[in-house]
Length: 195
Image 1 (tube, rainbow, N blue to C red):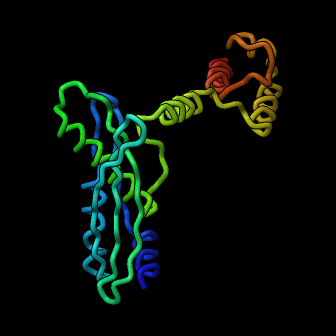
Image 2: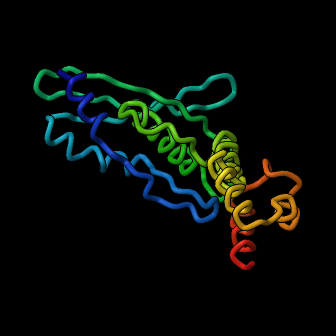
């Protein structure tokens, strides 16, 4: 039964990134947000969620291992997911217990993400996230080229008006019709209307 119920939770539960980091300018969710989103499902489906941490040393580094255990109270079946987070040697402005607590929260968030199949959008504290954000920004701000239909439509209008397309293209700072973007197209249309 546990997997049927877990499947229901995974397919329906939403845990939006409702927190905002004003320094990094990104939205995020934390373990508490995920737990709050889970509570109605736990009550409705008879599921108990338990979180445990353990400390593991690997080499000279200390890791927090967080484990989320989901238990079906009807038949005591269970499943669990674990995630690790490494404690930094030190963190400015935090004492040792705060460093451990922050690391625990981070590990718990990731084991809950795994258990409930929350989206895989890159977290804002990773290089992958920064790369993804930069690529999205570039894609959104890259001038979109005109479609063949739009180019042909422009050619038809220019021809009907008896204008020189090459001249209009040069006036918007381009060398060829293939370089036309939505912005340059709009400039040409304004010129045509002005004549």
